[in-house]
Image (cartoon, rainbow, N blue to C red; front, side, top):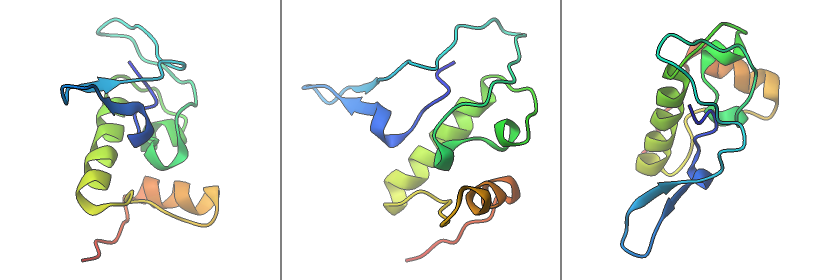
Length: 99
């Protein structure tokens, strides 16, 4: 489990192959393992982590979805002037699509 998937950690090699970098907070886990550590980059963190719930590989899927959104729209879906407001937006799943 990577636990910090974000645009800054997605790289392309000379052939255009996608590479994932920065495994500083990653953890090797089994299929039935759950974690409770709070880690990751604020705009990409899954709601489970913010709520202090146990989590597994699903948090990397959430972060990958945020990356995909940013690639399509040019910005992350959740933005706020304070961490508290950002966390609220993420937990509520509220974002605005702008053309």
